[in-house]
Image 1 (cartoon, rainbow, N blue to C red):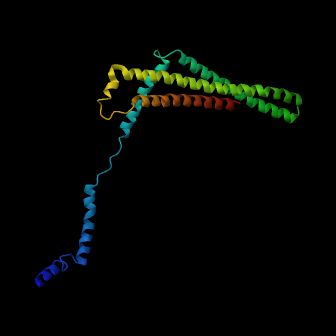
Image 2 (tube, helix red, strand yellow):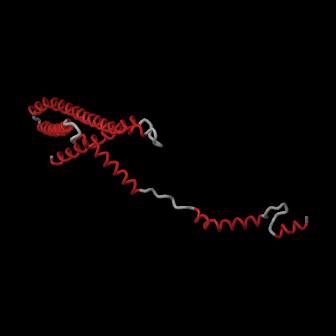
Image 3 (tube, helix red, strand yellow):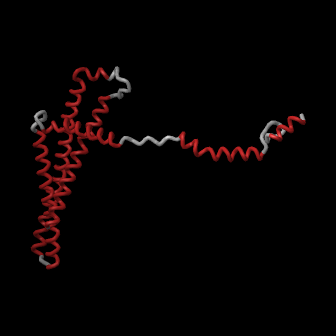
Length: 219
């Protein structure tokens, strides 16, 4: 036993076969000194996302979508599409003219009030209700024309995509494809709704904003 204790003390071991506190501290410092080199070899650089590939994919999908959706105004579509767009643009112009008329009415009536011109104030007061009624009517008609355009475009695109999906038994291939989406007809209807409503809202808002800014800038 005395021999074992002597050897344990020689190698820095405690009497029960454990390392002494000084030996444990020395070994801990050695491991810390060796850690950076080992970690440098083990840690790999994080994989960077393929941004270029993602952009190409988005461009391909966008181009493919517009190639199919623009058929509503092409030979495969109906003549009603151009009528709806022309009607919507015409209503926007009339609505803008009404807004301009309301602006002019406000300026003239305040000038008349300043000059205390009672005849002009009475005449403008009789014109206010017709202008207001026309403005409300055109606003309602603009919403109706916009929603009709969206609904007709959505109906045409939905029928076009469903026909392509049913052609050549593509719907049957989903049964044998791995990772196929569930309920494709429901997803198709919802995606078509979003894809047709957003562009019409954006274009209508942009035309209204640009024409309004140009008109009131000149005025």
